[in-house]
Length: 506
Image 1 (tube, rainbow, N blue to C red):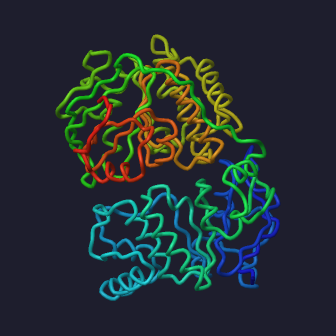
Image 2 (tube, helix red, strand yellow; image 1 turned 30 degrees about the vertical axis):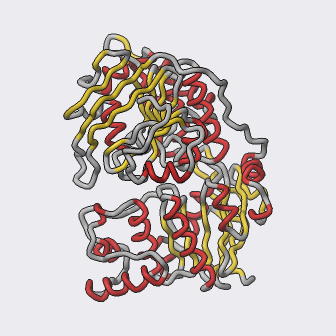
Protein backbone atom coordinates (compact mmCIF):
# COMPACT_ATOMS: atom_id res chain seq x y z
CA UNK A 1 0.00 0.00 0.00
CA UNK A 2 1.27 3.48 -0.89
CA UNK A 3 2.20 5.60 2.14
CA UNK A 4 0.17 8.80 2.26
CA UNK A 5 1.81 10.21 5.40
CA UNK A 6 5.19 9.33 6.89
CA UNK A 7 6.06 10.50 10.39
CA UNK A 8 9.79 10.24 11.15
CA UNK A 9 11.34 10.88 14.56
CA UNK A 10 8.83 13.47 15.79
CA UNK A 11 9.53 14.82 19.27
CA UNK A 12 7.78 17.37 21.46
CA UNK A 13 8.53 18.33 25.05
CA UNK A 14 6.85 20.67 27.52
CA UNK A 15 8.22 21.80 30.91
CA UNK A 16 8.49 18.64 32.99
CA UNK A 17 6.88 16.39 30.35
CA UNK A 18 8.16 14.68 27.19
CA UNK A 19 4.94 14.30 25.19
CA UNK A 20 6.45 12.60 22.13
CA UNK A 21 9.90 11.03 21.83
CA UNK A 22 11.24 9.89 18.43
CA UNK A 23 7.81 8.84 17.07
CA UNK A 24 7.84 7.19 13.65
CA UNK A 25 5.03 5.48 11.72
CA UNK A 26 3.20 5.74 8.41
CA UNK A 27 -0.38 5.75 7.15
CA UNK A 28 -1.28 4.27 3.79
CA UNK A 29 -3.85 5.57 1.32
CA UNK A 30 -7.24 4.02 1.98
CA UNK A 31 -6.13 2.66 5.37
CA UNK A 32 -8.00 2.97 8.67
CA UNK A 33 -5.11 3.25 11.11
CA UNK A 34 -5.62 3.17 14.88
CA UNK A 35 -3.50 5.22 17.26
CA UNK A 36 -3.60 3.52 20.66
CA UNK A 37 -2.18 4.43 24.03
CA UNK A 38 -3.17 5.02 27.61
CA UNK A 39 -3.94 8.52 28.85
CA UNK A 40 -0.86 10.69 28.66
CA UNK A 41 0.80 8.42 26.07
CA UNK A 42 1.14 11.32 23.63
CA UNK A 43 -1.68 10.67 21.15
CA UNK A 44 -3.21 14.15 21.36
CA UNK A 45 0.11 15.93 20.96
CA UNK A 46 0.98 13.74 17.96
CA UNK A 47 -2.24 14.43 16.05
CA UNK A 48 -2.00 18.14 16.92
CA UNK A 49 1.40 18.19 15.21
CA UNK A 50 -0.05 16.44 12.17
CA UNK A 51 -2.92 18.95 12.06
CA UNK A 52 -0.74 22.03 12.56
CA UNK A 53 -1.88 22.97 16.04
CA UNK A 54 1.53 22.21 17.59
CA UNK A 55 5.00 22.49 16.09
CA UNK A 56 7.39 19.57 16.70
CA UNK A 57 10.74 20.18 18.38
CA UNK A 58 12.43 17.76 15.96
CA UNK A 59 11.66 15.15 13.33
CA UNK A 60 9.87 15.48 10.02
CA UNK A 61 6.70 14.53 8.16
CA UNK A 62 6.21 13.64 4.51
CA UNK A 63 2.76 13.91 2.90
CA UNK A 64 2.28 12.42 -0.59
CA UNK A 65 6.02 12.42 -1.13
CA UNK A 66 6.51 16.08 -0.20
CA UNK A 67 7.85 17.65 3.03
CA UNK A 68 4.91 18.50 5.26
CA UNK A 69 5.31 21.24 7.89
CA UNK A 70 1.89 22.78 8.63
CA UNK A 71 2.28 26.01 10.59
CA UNK A 72 -1.46 26.11 11.42
CA UNK A 73 -4.63 24.07 10.81
CA UNK A 74 -5.43 26.19 7.73
CA UNK A 75 -2.25 24.92 6.10
CA UNK A 76 -3.08 21.34 7.08
CA UNK A 77 -6.54 21.61 5.55
CA UNK A 78 -5.08 23.10 2.37
CA UNK A 79 -2.77 20.06 2.15
CA UNK A 80 -5.73 17.67 2.48
CA UNK A 81 -5.64 16.90 6.23
CA UNK A 82 -8.89 17.28 8.20
CA UNK A 83 -9.76 16.53 11.81
CA UNK A 84 -12.95 15.79 13.74
CA UNK A 85 -12.30 16.67 17.39
CA UNK A 86 -13.62 14.88 20.45
CA UNK A 87 -15.33 18.12 21.57
CA UNK A 88 -17.63 19.60 18.95
CA UNK A 89 -16.97 23.20 17.89
CA UNK A 90 -20.52 24.16 16.94
CA UNK A 91 -22.85 27.07 17.77
CA UNK A 92 -26.26 25.92 19.01
CA UNK A 93 -28.05 29.08 17.87
CA UNK A 94 -26.88 28.71 14.24
CA UNK A 95 -28.21 26.27 11.70
CA UNK A 96 -26.23 23.45 10.08
CA UNK A 97 -25.24 25.40 6.97
CA UNK A 98 -24.10 28.42 8.99
CA UNK A 99 -21.95 26.21 11.22
CA UNK A 100 -20.39 24.50 8.20
CA UNK A 101 -19.66 27.89 6.59
CA UNK A 102 -17.79 29.04 9.71
CA UNK A 103 -15.33 26.19 9.25
CA UNK A 104 -14.54 26.97 5.60
CA UNK A 105 -11.91 29.37 4.29
CA UNK A 106 -14.05 30.66 1.40
CA UNK A 107 -17.62 29.41 1.81
CA UNK A 108 -19.86 29.54 -1.27
CA UNK A 109 -23.24 31.33 -1.23
CA UNK A 110 -25.51 29.84 1.42
CA UNK A 111 -27.95 28.33 -1.08
CA UNK A 112 -25.20 26.53 -2.96
CA UNK A 113 -23.61 25.41 0.30
CA UNK A 114 -26.92 23.94 1.47
CA UNK A 115 -27.16 21.91 -1.73
CA UNK A 116 -23.62 20.59 -1.26
CA UNK A 117 -24.34 19.65 2.35
CA UNK A 118 -27.42 17.67 1.30
CA UNK A 119 -25.56 15.94 -1.54
CA UNK A 120 -22.45 15.02 0.46
CA UNK A 121 -24.33 13.98 3.60
CA UNK A 122 -26.66 11.68 1.66
CA UNK A 123 -23.84 10.23 -0.44
CA UNK A 124 -22.02 9.10 2.71
CA UNK A 125 -25.06 7.92 4.66
CA UNK A 126 -25.09 10.91 7.04
CA UNK A 127 -28.29 12.76 6.04
CA UNK A 128 -28.52 16.34 7.32
CA UNK A 129 -30.98 19.16 6.86
CA UNK A 130 -28.95 22.38 6.34
CA UNK A 131 -31.76 24.53 7.79
CA UNK A 132 -32.01 22.79 11.18
CA UNK A 133 -30.69 24.56 14.28
CA UNK A 134 -27.69 22.74 15.73
CA UNK A 135 -29.19 23.19 19.19
CA UNK A 136 -32.05 20.90 18.15
CA UNK A 137 -29.75 18.10 16.92
CA UNK A 138 -28.81 14.93 18.78
CA UNK A 139 -25.17 14.28 19.63
CA UNK A 140 -24.93 11.90 16.69
CA UNK A 141 -26.36 14.49 14.30
CA UNK A 142 -23.93 17.10 15.60
CA UNK A 143 -21.07 14.80 14.82
CA UNK A 144 -22.44 14.45 11.30
CA UNK A 145 -22.13 18.22 10.93
CA UNK A 146 -18.45 18.05 11.92
CA UNK A 147 -17.78 15.16 9.53
CA UNK A 148 -19.62 16.73 6.61
CA UNK A 149 -17.73 19.98 7.19
CA UNK A 150 -14.51 17.97 6.79
CA UNK A 151 -15.76 16.02 3.77
CA UNK A 152 -16.55 19.23 1.91
CA UNK A 153 -12.79 19.90 1.99
CA UNK A 154 -12.18 16.61 0.09
CA UNK A 155 -9.55 15.40 2.61
CA UNK A 156 -6.94 12.75 1.84
CA UNK A 157 -6.33 12.15 5.56
CA UNK A 158 -9.12 12.34 8.13
CA UNK A 159 -8.18 12.33 11.82
CA UNK A 160 -10.92 11.24 14.23
CA UNK A 161 -10.54 11.64 18.01
CA UNK A 162 -12.89 9.47 20.13
CA UNK A 163 -15.66 9.71 17.50
CA UNK A 164 -18.11 7.26 19.11
CA UNK A 165 -18.06 8.52 22.72
CA UNK A 166 -21.51 10.16 22.40
CA UNK A 167 -23.14 7.87 19.85
CA UNK A 168 -25.82 5.20 20.18
CA UNK A 169 -24.97 1.68 18.90
CA UNK A 170 -27.05 2.39 15.79
CA UNK A 171 -25.19 5.66 15.12
CA UNK A 172 -21.85 3.86 15.54
CA UNK A 173 -22.82 1.45 12.75
CA UNK A 174 -23.72 4.37 10.47
CA UNK A 175 -20.37 6.04 11.22
CA UNK A 176 -18.42 2.85 10.54
CA UNK A 177 -20.18 2.39 7.19
CA UNK A 178 -19.23 5.95 6.26
CA UNK A 179 -15.58 5.48 7.24
CA UNK A 180 -15.35 2.24 5.27
CA UNK A 181 -16.78 4.03 2.22
CA UNK A 182 -14.20 6.82 2.58
CA UNK A 183 -11.39 4.31 2.93
CA UNK A 184 -12.56 2.44 -0.18
CA UNK A 185 -12.30 5.74 -2.08
CA UNK A 186 -8.68 6.14 -0.98
CA UNK A 187 -9.03 8.44 2.04
CA UNK A 188 -6.72 7.50 4.90
CA UNK A 189 -8.23 7.64 8.40
CA UNK A 190 -6.25 8.04 11.62
CA UNK A 191 -8.58 6.78 14.33
CA UNK A 192 -8.17 7.39 18.08
CA UNK A 193 -10.42 5.51 20.48
CA UNK A 194 -10.31 3.78 23.86
CA UNK A 195 -13.06 1.38 22.74
CA UNK A 196 -10.88 -1.55 21.77
CA UNK A 197 -13.61 -3.78 20.38
CA UNK A 198 -14.38 -0.99 17.90
CA UNK A 199 -10.71 -0.83 16.95
CA UNK A 200 -10.72 -4.59 16.28
CA UNK A 201 -13.79 -4.34 14.06
CA UNK A 202 -12.82 -1.24 12.09
CA UNK A 203 -9.08 -0.74 11.79
CA UNK A 204 -6.50 -2.28 9.45
CA UNK A 205 -3.41 -1.46 11.51
CA UNK A 206 -2.62 -0.06 14.93
CA UNK A 207 0.34 1.90 16.25
CA UNK A 208 0.74 1.73 20.03
CA UNK A 209 2.23 4.59 22.04
CA UNK A 210 3.43 4.36 25.62
CA UNK A 211 4.82 7.36 27.50
CA UNK A 212 5.42 9.24 24.27
CA UNK A 213 7.21 6.48 22.34
CA UNK A 214 6.06 3.95 19.75
CA UNK A 215 6.33 0.56 21.47
CA UNK A 216 4.53 -1.73 19.01
CA UNK A 217 2.31 -2.08 15.97
CA UNK A 218 -0.10 -4.82 14.97
CA UNK A 219 -3.14 -5.91 13.00
CA UNK A 220 -5.84 -5.31 15.67
CA UNK A 221 -8.09 -7.98 14.15
CA UNK A 222 -5.51 -10.56 15.20
CA UNK A 223 -5.52 -9.44 18.83
CA UNK A 224 -8.13 -9.59 21.59
CA UNK A 225 -9.24 -6.39 23.30
CA UNK A 226 -7.39 -7.54 26.44
CA UNK A 227 -4.18 -8.10 24.46
CA UNK A 228 -4.44 -4.61 22.92
CA UNK A 229 -4.96 -3.10 26.38
CA UNK A 230 -1.94 -4.95 27.74
CA UNK A 231 0.19 -3.74 24.80
CA UNK A 232 -0.86 -0.18 25.67
CA UNK A 233 -0.05 -0.33 29.39
CA UNK A 234 2.78 -2.86 29.32
CA UNK A 235 1.19 -4.97 32.04
CA UNK A 236 -1.68 -7.38 32.59
CA UNK A 237 -5.03 -5.63 32.85
CA UNK A 238 -7.03 -6.09 36.03
CA UNK A 239 -10.76 -6.77 35.77
CA UNK A 240 -13.02 -4.83 38.20
CA UNK A 241 -14.42 -7.14 40.86
CA UNK A 242 -16.85 -6.74 43.69
CA UNK A 243 -17.83 -9.01 46.54
CA UNK A 244 -21.48 -10.06 46.45
CA UNK A 245 -23.54 -8.40 49.19
CA UNK A 246 -27.15 -7.48 49.78
CA UNK A 247 -28.02 -3.75 49.58
CA UNK A 248 -28.75 -2.04 52.89
CA UNK A 249 -31.13 0.72 53.94
CA UNK A 250 -32.45 3.37 51.56
CA UNK A 251 -30.02 6.28 51.60
CA UNK A 252 -31.08 8.51 48.72
CA UNK A 253 -34.71 8.94 47.70
CA UNK A 254 -35.84 11.12 44.80
CA UNK A 255 -39.56 11.57 44.18
CA UNK A 256 -41.34 13.34 41.30
CA UNK A 257 -38.40 15.65 40.69
CA UNK A 258 -38.84 18.30 37.98
CA UNK A 259 -36.36 20.93 36.84
CA UNK A 260 -36.59 23.32 33.88
CA UNK A 261 -33.35 23.40 31.90
CA UNK A 262 -31.52 26.73 32.04
CA UNK A 263 -30.07 25.91 28.61
CA UNK A 264 -32.54 26.80 25.82
CA UNK A 265 -31.29 23.69 24.00
CA UNK A 266 -31.20 21.51 27.12
CA UNK A 267 -33.74 18.98 28.39
CA UNK A 268 -35.99 19.67 31.37
CA UNK A 269 -36.49 16.94 33.98
CA UNK A 270 -40.04 15.67 34.38
CA UNK A 271 -41.18 13.65 37.37
CA UNK A 272 -37.92 11.81 38.11
CA UNK A 273 -38.25 9.16 40.84
CA UNK A 274 -35.78 6.56 42.14
CA UNK A 275 -34.13 5.28 45.31
CA UNK A 276 -30.59 4.09 46.03
CA UNK A 277 -29.68 1.78 48.89
CA UNK A 278 -26.54 1.69 51.00
CA UNK A 279 -23.90 -0.32 49.17
CA UNK A 280 -25.69 -0.09 45.81
CA UNK A 281 -24.74 1.32 42.42
CA UNK A 282 -27.65 2.63 40.34
CA UNK A 283 -26.73 2.95 36.68
CA UNK A 284 -28.57 5.55 34.60
CA UNK A 285 -28.13 5.25 30.83
CA UNK A 286 -29.38 7.24 27.87
CA UNK A 287 -28.34 8.95 24.68
CA UNK A 288 -26.57 12.29 25.22
CA UNK A 289 -28.86 15.27 25.64
CA UNK A 290 -31.75 13.56 27.42
CA UNK A 291 -31.33 15.34 30.77
CA UNK A 292 -28.09 13.89 32.14
CA UNK A 293 -26.50 17.27 32.96
CA UNK A 294 -29.74 18.55 34.48
CA UNK A 295 -30.07 15.46 36.68
CA UNK A 296 -26.55 15.85 38.06
CA UNK A 297 -27.20 19.55 38.71
CA UNK A 298 -30.37 18.72 40.64
CA UNK A 299 -28.67 16.03 42.74
CA UNK A 300 -25.53 18.09 43.43
CA UNK A 301 -27.44 21.20 44.49
CA UNK A 302 -26.17 23.36 41.61
CA UNK A 303 -29.82 23.74 40.60
CA UNK A 304 -32.82 23.63 42.92
CA UNK A 305 -35.70 21.55 41.58
CA UNK A 306 -38.97 23.31 40.82
CA UNK A 307 -40.99 20.34 42.09
CA UNK A 308 -40.46 17.06 43.88
CA UNK A 309 -38.28 15.98 46.79
CA UNK A 310 -34.76 14.71 47.45
CA UNK A 311 -34.18 12.93 50.76
CA UNK A 312 -31.05 11.62 52.45
CA UNK A 313 -31.84 9.05 55.16
CA UNK A 314 -35.42 10.34 55.03
CA UNK A 315 -34.47 13.99 55.62
CA UNK A 316 -35.25 16.54 52.88
CA UNK A 317 -32.14 18.06 51.27
CA UNK A 318 -33.62 19.44 48.06
CA UNK A 319 -33.32 23.07 49.18
CA UNK A 320 -29.61 22.79 50.04
CA UNK A 321 -26.89 24.20 47.77
CA UNK A 322 -23.71 22.37 46.70
CA UNK A 323 -21.65 23.35 49.75
CA UNK A 324 -24.32 22.28 52.21
CA UNK A 325 -24.77 18.97 50.41
CA UNK A 326 -21.04 18.34 50.48
CA UNK A 327 -21.09 18.99 54.21
CA UNK A 328 -23.52 16.08 54.65
CA UNK A 329 -21.40 13.89 52.32
CA UNK A 330 -23.45 14.14 49.10
CA UNK A 331 -20.73 14.58 46.48
CA UNK A 332 -20.71 14.73 42.69
CA UNK A 333 -18.46 14.77 39.62
CA UNK A 334 -19.89 16.34 36.44
CA UNK A 335 -19.22 15.24 32.86
CA UNK A 336 -17.37 18.36 31.72
CA UNK A 337 -14.08 17.96 33.49
CA UNK A 338 -12.31 21.09 32.20
CA UNK A 339 -14.31 24.15 33.19
CA UNK A 340 -16.97 22.49 35.34
CA UNK A 341 -15.26 19.80 37.43
CA UNK A 342 -11.91 21.62 37.35
CA UNK A 343 -10.79 25.21 36.81
CA UNK A 344 -8.38 25.03 33.82
CA UNK A 345 -5.80 27.60 34.97
CA UNK A 346 -5.75 26.63 38.65
CA UNK A 347 -3.28 24.09 40.02
CA UNK A 348 -4.34 20.62 41.10
CA UNK A 349 -3.85 21.74 44.70
CA UNK A 350 -6.23 24.65 44.16
CA UNK A 351 -8.69 22.39 42.38
CA UNK A 352 -8.55 20.00 45.32
CA UNK A 353 -9.46 22.90 47.61
CA UNK A 354 -12.47 23.82 45.49
CA UNK A 355 -14.45 20.71 46.43
CA UNK A 356 -12.55 19.14 49.33
CA UNK A 357 -12.12 22.11 51.69
CA UNK A 358 -15.19 21.14 53.71
CA UNK A 359 -14.81 17.35 53.85
CA UNK A 360 -11.02 17.35 54.28
CA UNK A 361 -10.77 20.31 56.64
CA UNK A 362 -8.55 22.29 54.31
CA UNK A 363 -9.65 25.65 55.70
CA UNK A 364 -9.89 26.92 59.26
CA UNK A 365 -11.27 30.26 60.49
CA UNK A 366 -11.03 31.74 57.03
CA UNK A 367 -7.45 30.62 56.41
CA UNK A 368 -6.51 28.02 53.79
CA UNK A 369 -4.29 25.16 54.94
CA UNK A 370 -2.02 24.90 51.91
CA UNK A 371 0.25 22.08 53.15
CA UNK A 372 -2.81 19.93 53.85
CA UNK A 373 -4.31 20.81 50.47
CA UNK A 374 -1.09 19.88 48.66
CA UNK A 375 -0.90 16.62 50.61
CA UNK A 376 -4.48 15.75 49.67
CA UNK A 377 -3.87 16.56 45.99
CA UNK A 378 -0.70 14.43 46.08
CA UNK A 379 -2.66 11.56 47.64
CA UNK A 380 -5.19 11.73 44.79
CA UNK A 381 -2.34 11.76 42.24
CA UNK A 382 -0.65 8.72 43.79
CA UNK A 383 -3.78 6.69 44.55
CA UNK A 384 -5.30 7.15 41.08
CA UNK A 385 -2.01 7.10 39.12
CA UNK A 386 -2.51 10.60 37.69
CA UNK A 387 0.34 11.26 35.25
CA UNK A 388 1.55 14.77 36.10
CA UNK A 389 4.80 16.25 37.45
CA UNK A 390 3.05 17.26 40.65
CA UNK A 391 0.13 19.02 42.40
CA UNK A 392 1.47 22.42 41.36
CA UNK A 393 0.64 21.79 37.70
CA UNK A 394 -2.48 23.48 36.33
CA UNK A 395 -5.48 21.37 35.36
CA UNK A 396 -5.32 22.19 31.66
CA UNK A 397 -1.77 20.76 31.47
CA UNK A 398 -3.09 17.23 32.06
CA UNK A 399 -4.37 14.94 29.34
CA UNK A 400 -8.14 14.47 29.41
CA UNK A 401 -7.95 11.00 30.89
CA UNK A 402 -5.52 11.99 33.63
CA UNK A 403 -7.64 14.96 34.61
CA UNK A 404 -10.65 12.62 34.74
CA UNK A 405 -8.76 10.33 37.13
CA UNK A 406 -7.95 13.32 39.32
CA UNK A 407 -11.58 14.56 39.36
CA UNK A 408 -13.01 11.15 40.26
CA UNK A 409 -10.27 10.42 42.78
CA UNK A 410 -10.75 13.78 44.48
CA UNK A 411 -14.38 12.89 45.21
CA UNK A 412 -13.90 9.20 46.08
CA UNK A 413 -11.15 9.94 48.63
CA UNK A 414 -13.51 12.26 50.50
CA UNK A 415 -15.50 9.15 51.51
CA UNK A 416 -18.98 10.31 50.46
CA UNK A 417 -22.21 8.81 51.72
CA UNK A 418 -23.69 9.47 48.27
CA UNK A 419 -21.67 9.97 45.09
CA UNK A 420 -23.23 11.01 41.78
CA UNK A 421 -20.95 10.85 38.73
CA UNK A 422 -21.69 11.66 35.09
CA UNK A 423 -19.56 9.86 32.45
CA UNK A 424 -16.90 8.66 34.94
CA UNK A 425 -14.65 7.04 32.30
CA UNK A 426 -15.31 9.25 29.27
CA UNK A 427 -12.16 9.51 27.15
CA UNK A 428 -10.21 7.29 29.55
CA UNK A 429 -8.02 4.37 28.48
CA UNK A 430 -8.85 0.75 29.34
CA UNK A 431 -6.53 0.50 32.33
CA UNK A 432 -7.65 3.82 33.82
CA UNK A 433 -11.32 2.96 33.18
CA UNK A 434 -10.87 -0.33 35.02
CA UNK A 435 -9.23 1.53 37.92
CA UNK A 436 -12.04 4.10 38.14
CA UNK A 437 -14.73 1.43 37.97
CA UNK A 438 -12.99 -0.55 40.70
CA UNK A 439 -12.86 2.59 42.86
CA UNK A 440 -16.63 3.05 42.43
CA UNK A 441 -17.25 -0.62 43.26
CA UNK A 442 -15.04 -0.35 46.35
CA UNK A 443 -16.86 2.82 47.41
CA UNK A 444 -20.22 1.05 47.20
CA UNK A 445 -18.81 -1.96 49.03
CA UNK A 446 -17.71 0.37 51.85
CA UNK A 447 -21.36 1.42 52.31
CA UNK A 448 -21.87 4.42 50.03
CA UNK A 449 -24.78 4.85 47.62
CA UNK A 450 -23.48 5.51 44.10
CA UNK A 451 -25.35 6.90 41.08
CA UNK A 452 -23.47 6.44 37.80
CA UNK A 453 -24.84 8.36 34.80
CA UNK A 454 -23.17 7.06 31.65
CA UNK A 455 -23.62 6.57 27.92
CA UNK A 456 -21.35 3.51 28.07
CA UNK A 457 -23.77 0.61 28.38
CA UNK A 458 -20.97 -1.94 28.85
CA UNK A 459 -19.77 0.09 31.81
CA UNK A 460 -23.21 0.26 33.40
CA UNK A 461 -23.83 -3.47 32.94
CA UNK A 462 -20.43 -4.21 34.46
CA UNK A 463 -20.73 -2.22 37.68
CA UNK A 464 -24.39 -1.35 38.37
CA UNK A 465 -26.83 -3.33 40.51
CA UNK A 466 -29.87 -1.76 38.89
CA UNK A 467 -30.36 0.12 35.64
CA UNK A 468 -32.70 2.92 34.55
CA UNK A 469 -32.74 5.03 31.39
CA UNK A 470 -33.28 8.73 30.76
CA UNK A 471 -35.33 9.73 27.74
CA UNK A 472 -36.47 13.31 27.08
CA UNK A 473 -36.11 14.19 30.75
CA UNK A 474 -38.06 11.20 32.08
CA UNK A 475 -36.61 8.20 33.90
CA UNK A 476 -37.78 4.62 33.42
CA UNK A 477 -38.34 2.44 36.49
CA UNK A 478 -35.08 0.84 37.62
CA UNK A 479 -34.56 -2.83 36.84
CA UNK A 480 -31.94 -5.32 38.06
CA UNK A 481 -28.97 -5.07 35.69
CA UNK A 482 -28.22 -8.75 35.68
CA UNK A 483 -30.15 -10.49 32.93
CA UNK A 484 -31.17 -7.36 31.02
CA UNK A 485 -31.00 -7.92 27.27
CA UNK A 486 -29.83 -5.39 24.70
CA UNK A 487 -33.37 -5.31 23.33
CA UNK A 488 -34.78 -4.42 26.75
CA UNK A 489 -32.10 -1.78 27.30
CA UNK A 490 -32.85 -0.31 23.87
CA UNK A 491 -36.56 -0.11 24.68
CA UNK A 492 -35.82 1.62 27.98
CA UNK A 493 -33.50 4.13 26.30
CA UNK A 494 -36.20 4.74 23.70
CA UNK A 495 -38.64 5.80 26.42
CA UNK A 496 -40.56 2.61 27.26
CA UNK A 497 -41.66 3.78 30.71
CA UNK A 498 -44.50 1.30 31.08
CA UNK A 499 -42.42 -1.89 30.73
CA UNK A 500 -43.09 -4.65 33.19
CA UNK A 501 -40.50 -4.35 35.97
CA UNK A 502 -39.88 -7.71 37.64
CA UNK A 503 -38.40 -7.60 41.15
CA UNK A 504 -37.44 -3.93 40.78
CA UNK A 505 -37.43 -1.43 43.59
CA UNK A 506 -37.50 2.30 42.91
